Length: 188
Ligand SMILES: *[C@@H]1O[C@H](CO)[C@@H](O)[C@H](O)[C@H]1NC(C)=O
Ligand SMILES: [Cu+2]
Image (cartoon, rainbow, N blue to C red; front, side, top):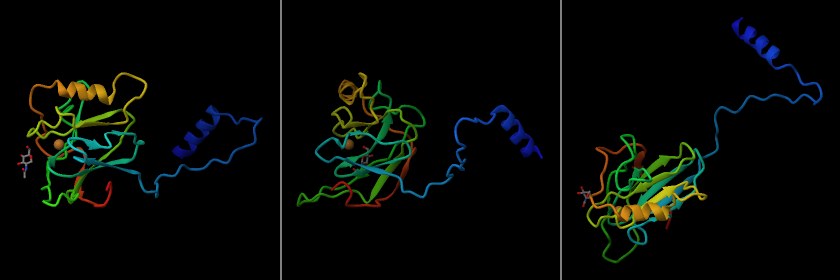
């Protein structure tokens, strides 16, 4: 009865347009069966870097961090404060120690860290390893940088280089999913 009243009210509020042919209304799909896009990022490939380090990822997609030697991590920062978590909710992957093989072959951790891209705002991040000062050395990146302004990855990196203190981590792994590497070949 209530639902019928609401429908009648809705009909009164939006009288039918007579000029155009009636389009058939369809219920929006409530669940999607299509797999999400996953963007792989490799920490430590090519030195103290994330590769790629400037990621464009649609809302709803997953950014999956893979970890190569030596002992990297990823933490979310604010653009103006690299090497420090943005706030209490910032994601933190924990550290991923991966010994470097004697024969120099490419290896990565058996675990990954995934974050979900929840909106189209830039996501600035860094590696918090203080042995070697990774963040301050330029191990930083961004998801969905704006390409029409001056908040660029290059500026973020130069801000990181100016950080005098040590990098800061969260008290625990949070803000994403850390688990078994679903695709150990990804990114190689
Ligand atoms: C990895 O780095 C973290 C942070 O510096 C440190 O606490 C941890 O002991 C390191 N792990 C190994 C195996 O070196
Ligand atoms: Cu690192």
